[in-house]
Amino acid sequence: MNRVHYDSHQLDELVLQMMETEQVGERVYRAALACAHHPALKKEWQGYLRDSQAHQGVVRRMCDALGLDPDAPTAARAVTRQLGDTWVQAIETAQRTCDPDTAQRVACECVLHTETSNHAQWELLGRVARVAVGDVGQTLKAAFKAVEKNEEHHLHHIQGWHRELAIQALGLPAVLPPPEAGKKMGQGLGGTPRAEPQVALH
Image (cartoon, rainbow, N blue to C red; front, side, top):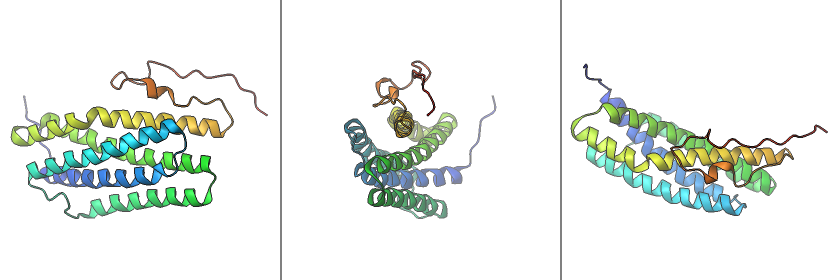
């Protein structure tokens, strides 16, 4: 069986971007919490903020094991930071200029952007972890295992909140907290379909 090779330089770049993305996540969640007025959503985001801080520790330890400076600047990392600045600014603008429900939806959308990026990066790391060998392979596998379920949980739950808050804004029956809130990750989202009520157009 042929051994699969990967670009070690790009792996280093990915890990440094992941460090930045986790830091962006902390900033976005801090801003978003100021707009969250649904009690269940606020509680979830408080937990996800703690997870984001813990994940930074996981990535820092991974950097140490790989011989990387976790604070090293790169061009791609600067772009990631700029995206984070944009999301935080959008949340803060919505908080100042919009009604509370709209501000909460804007915050939810920005959190969704953050979690989508974060999830994609961890998924890429997992792909490398499956083929990497030796100390590097062990390091990547341990880091991926430490956060895999959390990342899946975060993304699916925020997708549910984003959808249901938008449905509520349209005046349609919404399920809050969303159906995803009662699901265990790893079972997929198809197990409990969302009930769709019959509605009339006005």
